[in-house]
Length: 389
Image (cartoon, rainbow, N blue to C red):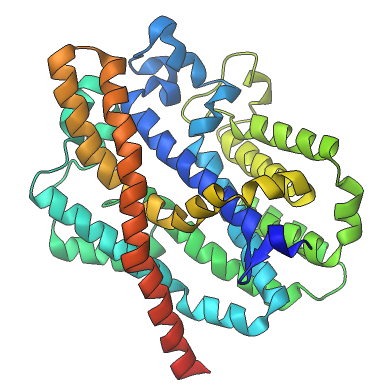
């Protein structure tokens, strides 16, 4: 391994860079579904572009920059990959990660939902009012309820992790999958990572989760497979290493990852791939697997993803994930409404609200990371070392 491009303080640098890009894609997905709903749901919702271009984007590979569910699948595969890599590198480290997992996730989430609760109490969110202009059902339903402090605590501390609730922060629908998937990864890796023909176990588990309609968990198993390949089967990785092969995998992975989520495709791009209601999940997971594999096999892409800007975004990715809905529902919607009322120009109103929103999201995420996430990780790590080592 090239330490300069891959690892620093136990972290895989190019994976952090990929995580940062995925965080931005999730942000973009929510801005698009809020302000250009037909780019997600197709012609069933209003178009706000010339020649209905946003409607066509819903079934186009150009939707990559806001393919939020695809980015989440990459997150899941990365999680399985990194956790199992940590097991191969240091068994004690995986014990620490498993023991502290809930607190490391829960406390930052609690801070974000507490901010959301306060904003709701003081009517700072304008998502419902903005939805009257944008026509986004998603935006209309975002905070269309009366907040209750006890309910907020219950949802944050329990429902988010064990029931998949996104009531107070819509992005948290996937937190229970991430939480259970992390322990699934640790369990599989500890139990079967050193046995012969373990790929048969991986295949059987994948079939079981598919039959149980728990398809997202296949992402974690694929992450384990990639970690196994990268750690124990370098000969296989070396056989497919090469710019041409890697780029083919990445391009094909992106194409599959842009399979429409909100509608059944009817155009020539994707209609031929339709195999039922779960098509988008299957293709997003398969596409995510191909992209991560392509990145693992391509040194040039690893170097790009290890650049400072992508490392910075990767470091902030969890904070970006948690806080961007707060900014979108408050600042972005407020500015959009004001500019729209003054100009009646839709695209102009969006741009004026969107550009400063991204700057504020990055700035707020930086503060959130420094003040909460970073200090929390240090505190939890010290507490674990004191009581369990």
